Image 1 (cartoon, rainbow, N blue to C red):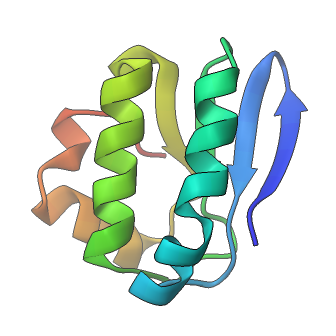
Image 2: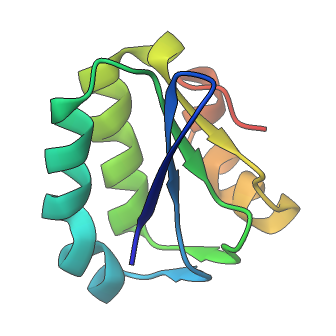
Length: 97
């Protein structure tokens, strides 16, 4: 399940622990429906996330392209997940904190 909240005029999308392919396929449409409806910047909060699949990397890339690099970011990323984004070169495309 994706939890949506608004903080400081930004849409925050909070995720569960494992963002595997099955999870991503199940919630991708709901996520992009919400992203496309808002004019606010998007934040993916990965505080509870300890694993991301290539499907989630694709979702992040698509969200970043749709919102623009300055209007999309990742926050509360644990070191092991941050390493995956860095290896994929995503740290050059979007803010990752």
